[in-house]
Image (cartoon, rainbow, N blue to C red; front, side):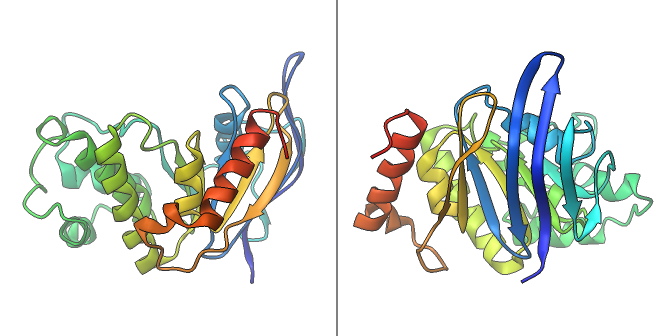
Length: 247
């Protein structure tokens, strides 16, 4: 299967601070890949490198087989906070990336708002939506950006547990229907295992890949998979890795 993203022997320093060390990561076409690791391990820095906002100290980044170092506009991006513009309507926020690229047609936004349960909110403003609804808008903005690779940076970390669980189900349903390539950053081990095909566990800074784990559970993935003994075992394995107690 072709690779959407290939990161090879990647290193990054901020002055004397070594943040990322010898990273090798791949995301195949249509694959959902998560990165879990402790706070400050460089996960968000990695996203800035993939998005072309930073240039690595050394190593390679390829998107769809082409060099992507320092090149912007090659990914769809969803940040930790929705980052919606309060003076723009919901449909105007959704089409922002396409508008910047020169396509101001809002018909696709209207179609997708209905498909993600936000019909009737096209002319609303962000302050009129709940936190979970705002996150749906932010994800939809990334989804219709026409980029094959979506980078999601802890998008559910600010949500309460119930809303977060609802967003997991929603995201899985939308992803199953589209199968875009996803690189997802989270602190939540259960979230990573529930959503992903592959999980990379990062060490403390400088971040290295402690282990690459292939998640074996079938799709479409049920919410009760978290009670499967195999899921519990993988969750414990990742917890032990990240707390420095590998079994």
